[in-house]
Length: 485
Image (tube, rainbow, N blue to C red; front, top):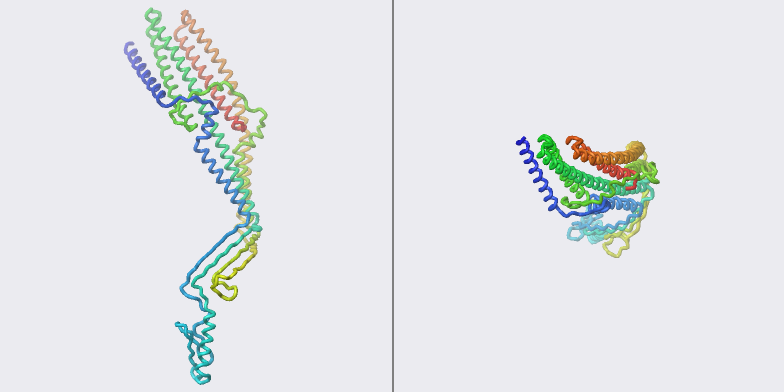
């Protein structure tokens, strides 16, 4: 017996040291902050990195939608180019043979005439030179100075009919923007639900910690009473060991509750975007107030507003538009264009390198009519089947969400009934404990019966906390499903 008592004292000292260290770490970890549930929600929504990412995605989708709309309007472009060439362009050869001779333009710019054999003396050499000089004049006129070429163009392109492609692209961009908005709202609801879950978990663990401390104090008092009774010879050493063992178990529960509260605080701080060392003091008044949020809310309407269903509906719109885009490949395309072109050299009045040209306007219409496009036909059929698959998935999801919402409603009703039963059980256990303490002091029941009453009281009180926490979490879940979070 003496050895067991010594080991028990060692365990008590070890547990006491651990509790002291835990208290010191909590005291030095960070500031204790008092928050309401709404304040925690606001912190999570404003400080979370995911909310910023969702906003950027929404903005990207918005600009893509505007870009799809802008594609329907005229597109104006301006182009300019410059090119340098090492040689001029000659439209005539530098040597041309006539019936009586050959005229040649030499590299140095001079012209010469060469008589054909047997034609000498037909005409004078001076006349031959005149022919060569005349050819040189024509040769020079038909020499284009293309060493420096400059071209400027301003044009307008306007699609007239492209098989409905632009309209469908705009619808796809619009649906994509809607998806970004829906996902952002859904993410906010998920964040709120996570905050509520972490918030009530902290409240629950804090209450259980209080219960563990009350239970520990009860056993400490009982241990002192049994020690006094042992001195008087009213109880045995075995009775004291039973109480001491129970009190040791209560110390472990205290430590577990303390550690659980620390971890729960860290989880709530992480969701709220606060330092993990933040120690919360929370408003727990709403834990016992659980209501059915089904006032003036139709389940069918609530399901229609669920983000899961809305996302599938937008995905179905995109699939239908993709089918129409595939069909657009089988439709004629008509595009009109107009522009102003200025060049140097210019051909306004012959070929000239002057900058006094006026340029010219041009306008035209291009029509493209597909005749045999088997690949587009097959793509269109594939897109239609893909759209039908999304539509079937949407209807299946609608049924599942209706079932989910109904189950959550029933679960909350069951949770409220469980709370009522747990409160009754806890009240009965508290009364039984009171009567057991009085009966034990009067010597009417045994020590084991008193400890059973204490254990039953702790279990009933813990069950009540669990029932209230489950009801609050279920209420938040149902409000999320009904769009009233």
